[in-house]
Every structure is written in C-alpha cells, then in structure tokens.
Length: 377
Image (cartoon, rainbow, N blue to C red; front, side, top):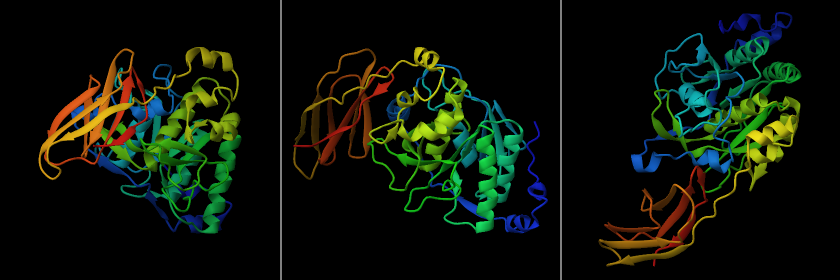
C-alpha cells in the first residue's frame, strides 16, 4: 500500500497555508525513557492492562495509523520505509499498541494491523504528519495514534490542522494525541475533536496536564521492535495504548461518535477503565458477552516488615503478608530499588543497609492489586 506523503498537495487552493507548512515545524516527541528489566521484574508483568480492565482475549482492533518517527521492520505493519532500530520511538509505539506474546500480552490491541507513517528520524515534522492524517482518512483508516506534540504553533498552521481534524471526525475516525506531561497541553492534542491522552503510573499518580483520558504510561511493561520486554516512561506510551483501546472498541461495533463523546467518563479513580465504556453504544449485549467484568484484587495486608541487625550495616529483613486465595498467585515485593517476585506471602533476605519501607502487591491470574506500602520497623 502506498503511503507516500506529498506535502505540496495539501491545500492547492490555499497557498498561504502551503507557505506556513513550508516552515517544516518540528515537534518534540513526548518524553520517553527505557529501563531494561530483570527477568524477575518483567516476567508476566502487564499491570497496565489489569489497571484498565482490558480483556486479554478477543479479536484485534480495526486497522490503525501510527504517525511517528522511523520504525523497525515488523510483520503486520504496512509502511513506505523501515530504516530504524528496535528501540526507535515509532517501533515502541507500534508495539505498545499491538504487540502480542501468547498468554502474556503487553499491548491494548494485540495483533491489530498498522499503517505506519514515518515523519522524521528523531522529531516529527508537523507538515508530514498532517499529510499522513489526510492519507489515512482517504484510505478509510478509522484510528490514528500521534505520540508527539509542540507547545505552540502558528495560527495558520492550527487552522489547517483543525480543518483536517473536522473532516476526520466527520468520516468516523478516532484521533489520539499526547497531551505531554505539563503544565500546558501540547498541540495537536489541544485541538477540539482530538482525544488527548495523559499518563499515570503504577501507583495511580496522574500527570497534572489536562486531557480527555488518563492511561498508564509510566513504569509500563512494553516490547521494543525486536519483541524484547522493557519498561517505558511517558505519555507517548499512554497515547499508543489509548489508540489500541479505540481500535478494539470499533472492532466490537461501538460507534465512533459515542466513543469520542463518552470516553472521558470511562474511568475508575481517574484512570481509564474498559468496563465503564461498554454502555456507550450498540451492540451492547454482544460486547458484554465477550468481555466479562474484571473483579478487582485487593492489596494484601502487610503483617510484618522487620529489620534484624544494625541500622547502618548489613542485616536481614523479614516480610510477611496476608495470604491471598486464588490460582496462580504471585507476590511482588519492592524495596531498596529492587523488585522481587515470589510465590509465597513472605520474604527473608540480607541487605547491606536497612530499607526505610517496603511495598507489596499481588497478582491473581492476570489481575493485579494496587501497591501497599509500610515502614520497616
């Protein structure tokens, strides 16, 4: 499929817009940091999917456009070029949206077909991105992910984008863009008709910038372009995952106008939750039959967190938590910069110095509890 971008044919009847586009405005990609994870930290960890109540079975989403910097070659992705590496921003966004690893998914819409539009190497060219948005609309693509933004843009440029956003919405498209981390919402996420996305972390903390929806984006478990597990940070990841949510909703028959107007109310404790959106549009009964409600897991009570030994030298920490019933139960302990995965509700380890606190959460099947933190006595 030809997705070549022709900047010179955007608005032939409006030469003043073309002059503005010729400025080739560049936009800063939403903040991103990759943290390699140990096997104990990363195994079976897709906590963000459980926080959002995402069903881990079902059909992939509708075809989605990802507009970003260059990407690594991946099966299931249509593009004009692949010139990047596994850790390029475009590769990471595609994987956050559609990666699949059998019983251990890390994306919101595993297997979703992607049209990738490369619009830069390290920064996204806004003129190229606008052409990509037009091209996606003419090809009938219904979801667009844009994990980029700038603090400001010329008014003539804003007008050109707003015109295309209106056309996209009239065509039944869902457009997702990063709000950034604040304090000011970025462009183009600030435009009416775009679903703006901000990030939260694994403790439920939410970025202060305004946005339509909040999706986990900090400390999230993701895969890079080579399929290797890593940890992502930033609203870029939130945006890609939000686009996967939209693609999956459309594949189940929900209506784009209802999603666009109602998705901000699909939340629990301020963070997007899948179950809250299931009443937005028909066919409601079919959706509910495929996606049963996710029962929350209660964080276990910490019964003991005691240090045995001198305060400023090596000793042993003993932690014991309330046992949780269920199948495939895992207890995760976080202390002194380490994260330790255990099958038992107790931990006894030697440390070089006394930790000040310990955090514990539990996983039952594919569902995570929230963290519970106590001081070490």
